[in-house]
Image (cartoon, rainbow, N blue to C red; front, side, top):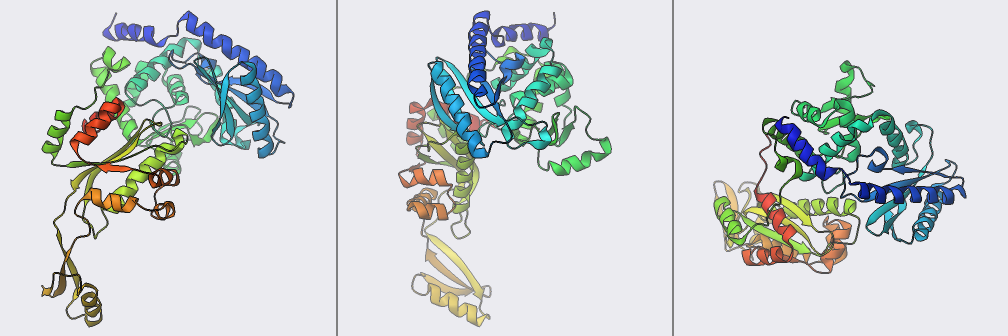
Length: 475
């Protein structure tokens, strides 16, 4: 038995559901499907199971499944939403569960039965992916394709790939992770036939790699695909729709991270790479040492996260951090951001951190004006600064004014920019949901003591800080 065989055997003990776990989930899934079919039939609709449970690729800690209610195409969007929600509410209520309305392209019912999550999603029953009326309409095509193409004997290979990605922070196509979806994992196993083969193939991938499982396109047309999916690191064509890249959500960072970790595993297979290790929060002495070594300063903007779904929250957080950087780096302020990142536990805390190259500035600032020979502009410049300037004089043929700075620290500038009414915040480009929270209160700090207070209350923030500083070398 090879080292890899030993490791995969041990890993499979953790990723294969037990008989009791199977019985529990499959029993509820079948009961939910049967009930949904019965309720949906009143509206001339059908129902089907979706998700990894249908192809036996689910991981034991993922106690969830989806049921899709397929409605006739003749329904309007409003009718689909209203009827779909009605079906979902009735089903979860009859199962004695709790539910809430969640939102994607259509609203849907997200229910909870004990510790099992169930989404009941309405969609249109269309004849082909060329006639989709909404994004979720394609899911039944995915279910049927995987059921047809993925042999049961390869289910564990999918589980190993999923576990490898989960353990190393690359699983999930949501806006938080920007990684590999479950469907992408299943397609990769179909394409390469094993977890190990996926790793071997991935180390040879290059940016813009094309995987065309159904041979929709000739090789000479691949350049057109690169242009069609410009900026997407991996192009894995949807075998049910040749115009769609199933890996569109994958970030370049996670594309190259997967290649790196695949090579690491192939060079030296280890159980730690397969099942992961616990990351400890960054300690106070470590933070002090890192900032001294890097000669930078962390500025943290902290607030309560808005109550929106994660797929809305995370992109808005990233845009917020981008906007903070642009505010600080406006020419007249001269602050400089080295790097930035965002963190939220999606309930109690949201932060944008900015690592500053230049976070403090001298009290005096030199304003270089127009040429001394440009009489009109020179007059305007002199009039503008004659009251506030400490000194005005010509230098190298240009007028120069020495003035007091408005803001000496990045913190002061951010506090000033964010302490504004909601309409002003939105006008400044702060994303809507974030702006609403900021208008109700926020905190900006850079003191190590305050940062560590947040870490003590939320260790995940400390883990985030460690990962921020312990950057990956992906080349």
